[in-house]
Image (cartoon, rainbow, N blue to C red; front, side, top):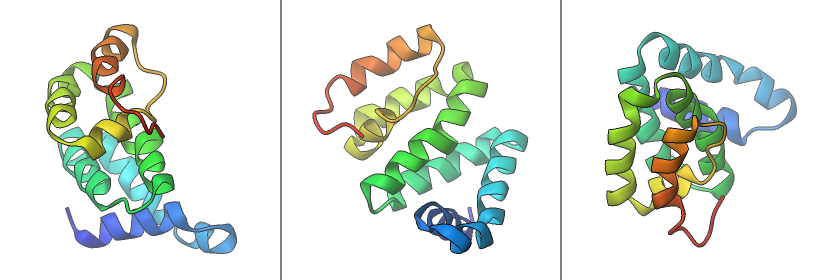
Length: 120
Protein backbone atom coordinates (compact mmCIF):
# COMPACT_ATOMS: atom_id res chain seq x y z
CA UNK A 1 0.00 0.00 0.00
CA UNK A 2 1.19 3.52 -0.62
CA UNK A 3 2.60 4.99 2.56
CA UNK A 4 0.67 8.17 1.82
CA UNK A 5 -2.64 6.25 2.09
CA UNK A 6 -1.69 5.06 5.57
CA UNK A 7 -0.41 8.48 6.61
CA UNK A 8 -3.46 10.28 5.18
CA UNK A 9 -5.95 7.94 6.88
CA UNK A 10 -4.17 8.32 10.21
CA UNK A 11 -4.04 12.11 9.78
CA UNK A 12 -7.80 12.13 9.13
CA UNK A 13 -8.39 9.99 12.21
CA UNK A 14 -6.31 12.31 14.38
CA UNK A 15 -7.73 15.56 13.00
CA UNK A 16 -10.62 17.61 14.35
CA UNK A 17 -12.98 20.20 12.93
CA UNK A 18 -12.25 21.66 9.50
CA UNK A 19 -8.97 19.78 9.26
CA UNK A 20 -10.84 16.48 9.59
CA UNK A 21 -13.24 17.52 6.83
CA UNK A 22 -10.37 18.43 4.52
CA UNK A 23 -8.91 14.94 4.97
CA UNK A 24 -12.18 13.04 4.49
CA UNK A 25 -11.05 11.80 1.06
CA UNK A 26 -8.45 9.65 2.86
CA UNK A 27 -11.19 7.90 4.83
CA UNK A 28 -13.21 7.40 1.63
CA UNK A 29 -10.22 5.85 -0.18
CA UNK A 30 -9.67 3.30 2.58
CA UNK A 31 -13.37 2.52 2.85
CA UNK A 32 -13.58 2.06 -0.92
CA UNK A 33 -10.52 -0.19 -0.99
CA UNK A 34 -11.90 -2.45 1.73
CA UNK A 35 -15.20 -2.81 -0.14
CA UNK A 36 -13.67 -3.22 -3.58
CA UNK A 37 -10.55 -5.26 -2.81
CA UNK A 38 -10.70 -6.94 0.62
CA UNK A 39 -7.26 -8.54 0.18
CA UNK A 40 -5.64 -5.15 -0.35
CA UNK A 41 -7.81 -3.85 2.48
CA UNK A 42 -6.35 -6.52 4.78
CA UNK A 43 -2.79 -5.52 3.90
CA UNK A 44 -3.64 -1.87 4.47
CA UNK A 45 -5.30 -2.63 7.79
CA UNK A 46 -2.17 -4.42 9.02
CA UNK A 47 -0.14 -1.36 8.03
CA UNK A 48 -2.58 0.92 9.85
CA UNK A 49 -2.31 -1.17 13.03
CA UNK A 50 1.48 -1.06 12.86
CA UNK A 51 1.54 2.71 12.21
CA UNK A 52 -1.07 3.72 14.82
CA UNK A 53 0.96 5.67 17.37
CA UNK A 54 -1.76 6.43 19.92
CA UNK A 55 -4.57 4.55 21.61
CA UNK A 56 -7.10 6.73 19.79
CA UNK A 57 -5.64 5.91 16.38
CA UNK A 58 -5.53 2.21 17.21
CA UNK A 59 -9.15 2.36 18.36
CA UNK A 60 -10.09 4.08 15.09
CA UNK A 61 -8.43 1.29 13.09
CA UNK A 62 -10.34 -1.25 15.20
CA UNK A 63 -13.72 0.45 14.78
CA UNK A 64 -13.07 1.24 11.12
CA UNK A 65 -11.12 -0.89 8.66
CA UNK A 66 -10.60 -3.96 10.86
CA UNK A 67 -14.23 -4.10 11.97
CA UNK A 68 -15.44 -3.56 8.40
CA UNK A 69 -13.32 -6.41 7.07
CA UNK A 70 -14.52 -8.79 9.77
CA UNK A 71 -18.17 -7.88 9.46
CA UNK A 72 -18.30 -8.14 5.66
CA UNK A 73 -15.87 -11.04 5.09
CA UNK A 74 -15.54 -12.85 8.42
CA UNK A 75 -14.76 -16.30 7.05
CA UNK A 76 -12.18 -14.95 4.61
CA UNK A 77 -10.15 -13.23 7.32
CA UNK A 78 -10.72 -15.02 10.63
CA UNK A 79 -7.76 -17.39 10.31
CA UNK A 80 -5.45 -14.50 9.42
CA UNK A 81 -6.87 -12.48 12.31
CA UNK A 82 -6.18 -15.34 14.71
CA UNK A 83 -2.63 -15.70 13.41
CA UNK A 84 -1.97 -11.97 13.72
CA UNK A 85 -3.50 -11.96 17.23
CA UNK A 86 -1.19 -14.80 18.30
CA UNK A 87 1.91 -13.09 16.93
CA UNK A 88 1.33 -9.39 17.58
CA UNK A 89 0.27 -7.92 20.95
CA UNK A 90 -0.62 -4.59 19.30
CA UNK A 91 -2.94 -6.32 16.83
CA UNK A 92 -4.47 -8.34 19.68
CA UNK A 93 -5.12 -5.10 21.56
CA UNK A 94 -6.64 -3.55 18.44
CA UNK A 95 -9.13 -6.43 18.33
CA UNK A 96 -10.53 -5.29 21.69
CA UNK A 97 -12.02 -2.29 19.88
CA UNK A 98 -13.89 -4.33 17.25
CA UNK A 99 -17.66 -4.61 17.81
CA UNK A 100 -20.66 -6.13 16.07
CA UNK A 101 -19.10 -9.40 14.96
CA UNK A 102 -21.16 -12.49 14.18
CA UNK A 103 -21.29 -14.75 17.27
CA UNK A 104 -19.06 -17.49 15.82
CA UNK A 105 -16.38 -14.95 14.89
CA UNK A 106 -16.70 -13.08 18.20
CA UNK A 107 -16.14 -16.36 20.03
CA UNK A 108 -12.96 -17.09 18.07
CA UNK A 109 -11.62 -13.55 18.60
CA UNK A 110 -12.49 -13.49 22.31
CA UNK A 111 -9.91 -16.12 23.20
CA UNK A 112 -7.26 -13.56 22.17
CA UNK A 113 -8.89 -10.38 23.42
CA UNK A 114 -9.52 -11.98 26.84
CA UNK A 115 -5.75 -11.95 27.41
CA UNK A 116 -5.46 -8.17 26.91
CA UNK A 117 -5.31 -6.27 30.18
CA UNK A 118 -5.22 -2.73 28.73
CA UNK A 119 -8.19 -2.87 26.36
CA UNK A 120 -9.11 -0.06 24.01
